[in-house]
Length: 471
Image (cartoon, rainbow, N blue to C red; front, side):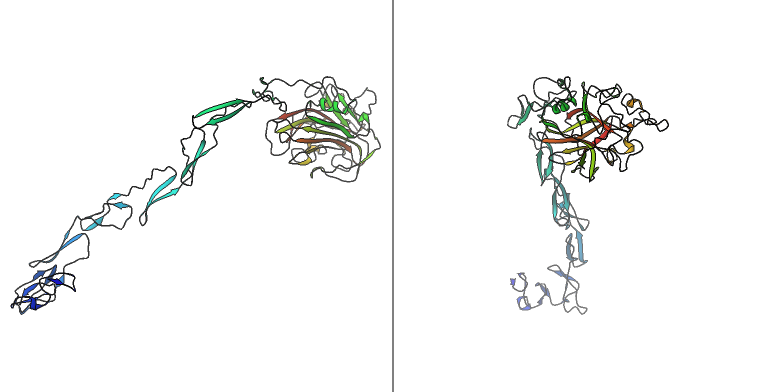
């Protein structure tokens, strides 16, 4: 019959359901009214009352252990036998758990590998498998990508140099469908320059490292345009003009500045001076000490960008202004400068110190770039002078210039020079830049200074800031 309260089938629900000499046990089994020992019924152990009149209320045989089989044997009581049945060890990282030796043992580790190289696979005992995104190198399987790296659990292809043939005169492209490269030739670039020595055809004319034809072989001091050619600036010059000059004798295109100072490239160089640009023995020469006072005032140049800034009036002012279009493949330029001064060593860094500036204006900057390695005003700093008696490069570079003549003060010579310095600055291909080579006297018009300028050249080198180095 069914015990509706217990919810399962029993022999009896009440004693009325049992024979006359039996009673209904709590477990729903008919037991004799009289007993002589323990009895088991429906997993419960019943003890016989001491007077043998019946059984007690009984005790269910259970140890609350899922990994034991609970049994009731009248002669032995409740017994618990270890089982091997399936179980759950409460660890999400194991599978096929089974009972062993009375406890639940974890089975095979859960396989969490999702086959994705862009995830780090792990297992959490509570939640199970986890797959977190990583940034590991990977391969997206595409021919036209490179530097592939994982992102957002997927392999993302990056730019590739697979098809770069290192030839600036071809357009390199990649065809994914055929896993092939194409190299389309470029036409000759009339606005590009050749960088001799890099073994590349920089201007796509079919030749490699061909030297640029010199343009300073036949020049004179008669034309402002000749000054650009004298410093080897042969193409792209929009204008070359002396905006201010105290005298035509204060500038010159020369084959040298005495035998001790030949051109750095080609056959000519340019000279600008606060006095005359001549050498001893030449017409219109004047000794740099005491020098030439042209008695012409000008205003201190602005826009120096914080380097060598000043105000008020200056004397013997020369301002050579160049506008130049940058070649399509140039990233920087360099120009060599060598400054001689009779102010050295007595009048540097004071109110009489002559000054040389190179004001540079481009799309990205507008400032004086004639600075020494310490970032100070380039040619009024004693640290910059290297050619003089007792200087690192001796006084040989002064020979024949007039700055080597005794100054009338013991054995001291008339001046010193910086030696050749290279000033370089960054540019943007195709832009128009302005260069202003400026020299002037401060405080007085005597004790002359002269700047030699030569060997202007373009470069593919990328520069962050202007730099100056000694040659």
